[in-house]
Length: 111
Length: 112
Image 1 (cartoon, rainbow over the protein chains, first blue to last red):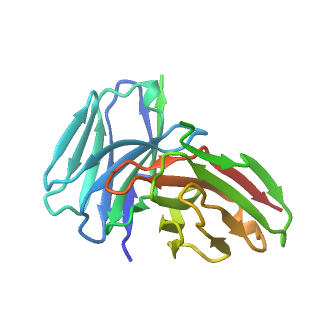
Image 2 (image 1 turned 180 degrees about the horizontal axis):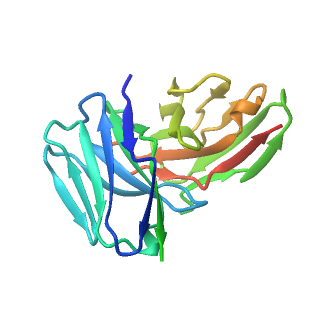
Image 3 (image 1 turned 45 degrees about the vertical axis):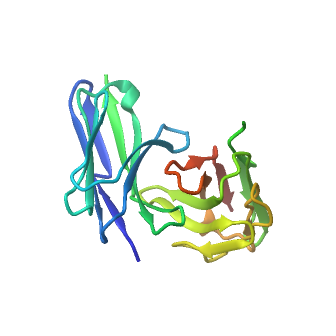
């Protein structure tokens, strides 16, 4: 079945440093979504990428979808303590609303 | 709108006990799913539903049952709890044709 792998599992950075998490799928994806989960909270939708090679920005966050639509990345520029949490990518399977999540990357930011 | 509501928030069970985790959404979403979250494992899909009366298995369905008698409700039943089912459980819903999954606040389950 479809698998979505995400690296790294953990990342500790100093406030102001950049951060990147990578997501790879075993199959071609129709789209990819990114979610953020604050400590003790629930996942919250950030963005969806649909087109091959697509790049989207949300303030300091840059999301990319690979040309082959099998990988994606999330880059945060100049991290802040509010960026702390676990970031998940998720690939959609077919047209059922069924989402397959990666393992997540937990980001810690030292002030 | 309350969104997706899960109850209870916390539960401790003894091995072999059964219980039902409740999930209700008031957004009239067609798709609903149950995930479990374990350290280092991300969110793993247990069961999902594309509409009332229709359910299917996800990645880790063993030990769990679901039913979807109404659009709003999607309960998850643990038939005979085992320590391996200690986890945080999330329910999510998605509107047909849309993108964003809305998650409940989660149920933290401990099986002793």
